[in-house]
Image (tube, rainbow, N blue to C red; front, side, top):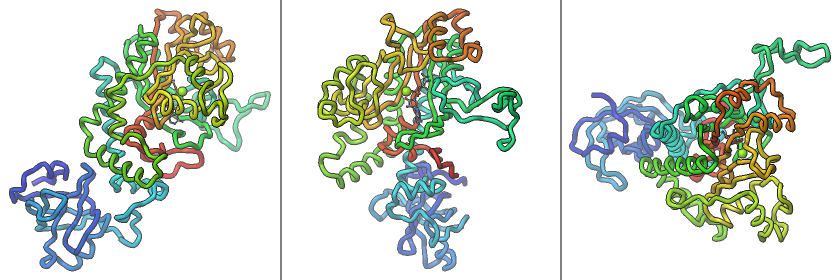
Length: 477
Ligand code: 4AD
Ligand code: MG
């Protein structure tokens, strides 16, 4: 007989047949009832120990957190809360757990405490549900692209170019930090570095993905992304995962259609395949809400929110319209915003994005046609000469979840923009080549994976949806 997972076991009929499971003890009550979990699902299986015929020493070692191997009969459960249970015939302690020091006690722990124990926090219901959903979403993403004729491209993690032109990158070097080689004018001489030039961890796979879109047609990347911005917020990580599709012959309207269809599809996938974990998180949030004053409670439950996104069209609004709405909004007039909007051209802060999504439109919003000078160099200039074909998708509770654009495919215009921004043509010679050889309209976007997981699970701190968060001053584990 082979051990099977608890989730498989719970689907079986109680016919008093022999079963075998391995897992970790969540609780052990009355010297009889083990709640056993193996991570296959949220569900524990109740294992009933015949304590009269079990060694006292073994009974003592059945403690919260211990790893055990159990054999027994699957029987109909007498107790409440489960339909089947295992009548234990043999139990082997695979790994003891000291109940005095084991941090994950069967009680409520704060998320702060669990972050400090990130290596053990997936042994809780909340974190195991979140991480199973993270895995399911990741699969749904690959499935969506595979089903729709996209090719998966592995873009490099070490790069020599700054895709976003923002300069907030982590340097990759093996020069001696104490005694680096210097050029004649006293700067560090990167020509002596490992790659013979200055290199960094990538902030986006987009530029390389564009090269593949211009040959394979429809591509996407899904990989780790690094930003050295010193943003200590609940929505920023220094290392996060980004999904970046890039499609040849597609304009901005097509890009918006793709992004909307894609987001709805992956959310539908988890609604259909991960109901148990979602229902658990939905209930958790409802319980949290009950403790809050009425005004601070969520209008929709987690499941309602997810269904709402799937069932409703995203509202498409130009930057110019958005500025008008914001300028005339109550919080702007009453100076409630930290950053008051008074002129066209202002960059939108998260308070503005959230006002548009949560208060004004009350649905996901796609903002497009932003002022050229607040967006990256590669975005296609509009006929008006001052806006670019950019789009950001804003989600309730999250703010910006997607950023994308139609790309500038005209060589002369791209060169002009790079010159204005002081970007080196020589460094991006290969990117410019795409505009010399068979250039074409093309578009793409980037979805921050952790922001999607936040939305899908209702978690409010991005550190709680990635196994081991990297943020300023923090790279434990
Ligand atoms: O808007 P961003 O910077 O766009 C790009 O990098 C483009 N190259 C994407 C493309 O067109 N292919 O980043 C895209 C998304 C953001 O909307 C946000 O969801 C997420 O990536 N993101 C972050 N997520 C967590 N922590 C951070 N520090 C993030 N920075 C961006
Ligand atoms: Mg952005």
